[in-house]
Image (cartoon, rainbow over all chains, first blue to last red; front, side):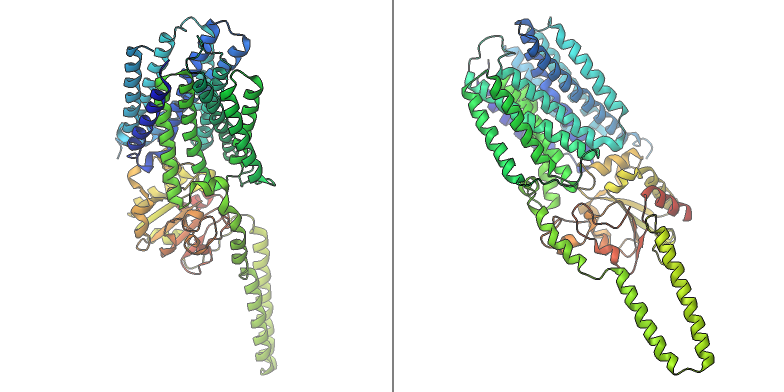
Length: 100
Length: 517
């Protein structure tokens, strides 16, 4: 297991880095940005997978599988739905590029 | 975690950051989104491979179910449903984080006894808390946006006290859970209390504060993910969660600045209460109907005075004129009564919205949430095309908080094929309103209400607004003249010159104008 302090430090660094990169995004693209970020927040899928997989292999009970399965489903909906919608939106912005 | 895994996590996190920075330009945004998605996919695959759970078949079943539902929802949804969908997805992510928190707290997902039990317990409890607030808060927001819940702010008796109590209980449970691990009662109570807090905080938000709440919840879902990542010790999860948390916070900050309100006042609903007296004061002015009545009486008295000095013939003439006038008034009244709920055209006969627009060489269109509701963006595009065909310059003025999520108007107008070069932010275009020939307002109210500069104590006081009031000719295509969410009446509607009110469904009224031009 990684030391807690390292984890907290990584969190802090990424927050600052994200803050500065995202600041450049114009308000025109705020909705796709938000929706993209929303999809990214489904990254918790990684956690759901680890927890559920380990629980199954360690022979934990049905409750663990139910919770884990629900977590995976919710997170996957978030990821697929989020990226899908973002993609649709961005294509709308882009489609008239060649026309104009 | 091996060195290779750590390096991979860092690389993938950088790819996510790269993807996001590519989203700052329209040209590269699609690729940027795909890059983020790919990085995420790689992260998921790497996790499955490295945590030795390749053989755990249940995870694949769950992934397929989730992927199917998610893809279906994303491809089926109409653009008008975008805000509630974003809110819904966001809530699901928060819910997933909360579940991961529960599992970690119950030590279900642990291969071995954790090395740092206090840290694991604390972060697991925190993941439950933030995840549940995100889940319930987002569901309430989505419900409000989808119109299944009351869209106005709902305030219960002792709302603040209950909210405070729930918050304190949540904090106490987090501490208790940190000390005592693997306790079902604490986990259940924590889920209920934090969920309750999420409900109480989201239910009192309404209208124009929605974009802020959504972006705040968006930020929270990232934070929840990052905390869940800390609980299970996953670098990639912590990194991406941190990035998302920062982005949501930044967006929230931008929106707050655009409305000139502090985040706290929105969350605690402070300014909302003060709105009441301000509305009353505007109501104190004599309603229009009454003034016309008085005028009628005055005229009648004058007529009577004149009658005294008149000969019989003149008297008869006057009576005839009077009857005519009464008949005309009656007809007008009947017409008003009959047509009042539907689209009433109140413009002056000399100038119609169509004739004003036909003359105009420079037009600014101001869209608002009403355009989204009426789904009028395609009709707006037709109007813009027609005006441009006649040689006018057409621009769109987008207020930062127009609509129900950040950038809402931009998406809708993009859907209607309106080039984004024609969309202007408030600061860019605000000085041009006074020189433009005509302004068309479509379903917008609060974002152009000049009362924001004067009506102290109202929710919109101090909010920068579009200077529509400076324009010579304003055509308002709103559903009605009722004050917007802020509850502050818009003095533009009462202006006696250069205002044309086309009330009713924006799609229909716009169509009518387009046909008349």
